Length: 526
Image (cartoon, rainbow, N blue to C red; front, side):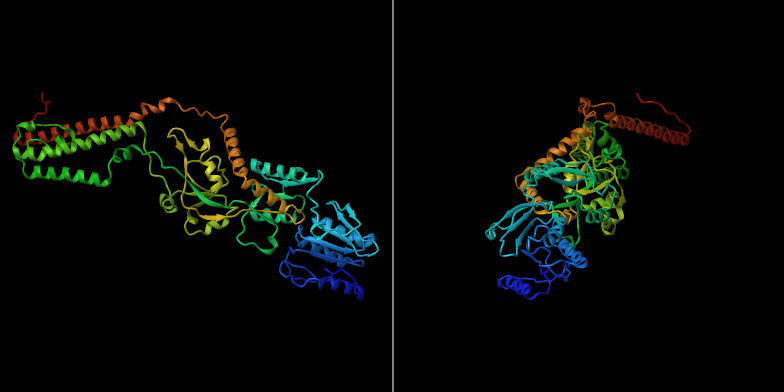
């Protein structure tokens, strides 16, 4: 970057520097050139700034704009006469304002070989009277921040992994960690939050996470999260069966159809051949009521009824056993495992649309989405929820989302994942901590500390939420109660009702026949 005036000797010196190496790509620009995110790389391996004169107000503004686009961790070599403050100070002021990390000032006056290093405040940190080896030329200005603040923001309750990450990074840099309230609130839409963070330059990292559909060149100041995430759906577990469903659940519809066909076929045979059976087929096979002992029945009746009696005895025994087990532990409807099953169930999916507007155009889920700001910490047990898998796996295990009566979690995570996301953090332009934050976060993740901290944070949070909650599971859940005997009462009532109806029907038929024959009576048989 040639900031020199048009003097022949100066241009020749600068040209010598440009021509010194031929095996690398070089971009030579003057003080009238404007850097954008498209015409030049934003993080070159080396930026050389050469100046031998004062800059006008317009040139100074353009120089500052160009430095703003360059990455703050780029290595910058400033060739300037360090003995003249009017040449050194304007450049130092801009580079300090943009918080460029690796900056070296080399004196262009051969009479006084001098190398100057500045600290993050723009003051002289070290001054050498010799030229160091190129490997040792650049120094990390933030490696020792000498207690200066490292500022971050968090818009909600700080999680353990983020707290430890910031504190450990501050210890690594010898900085004072300061937490502030950023421009984003919990209800702020994602795009509005990002716009506010781009304009903000008062912090080193805001811990707000974003997902970009496209990474534009202007968004190069981002720190990608170390672990990808995915959107999943939390669906309520299958509800307990009602009384009617409980009575028909022991057998599939194929078995029920077979039993009905057998009984209907035998009943039709008894109607066609009235003298064939002395016993009523349904009362004998289902209820075990005999009008005549089978030992005294004719051979044809015994041949037909004995196999059926054994068959229905096994069927009724199995049915009674299953009903008894259902009374001890009420079964439930099958859980939802796929999105297609979710759509067929008719459940609505709660989504915070301010952060996920594009889901309304989803061909599969768009029609069942409802806007909601409900917290995932307290699921209502009625609606499905859209969440990240890293959060969903912990939410379903929380005690507030546990069904103590059925002794199981209230929600189930669908096996299908809607999409894969890679969250990122926006790093302001005016901080050189991007590479350091990436290094420390990666170190904690590879050491297993990140996932460990996440697990401890969820356990601690769950314990706080349930501290005042009565979580005692009473022992009576393991024994039959009056409520559990409702199916038995229904069965007895149904039997009495059926017997009464049949008795009244028999009396009515008897009366009709007696009236037809001239006499009628209805009595109990003894």
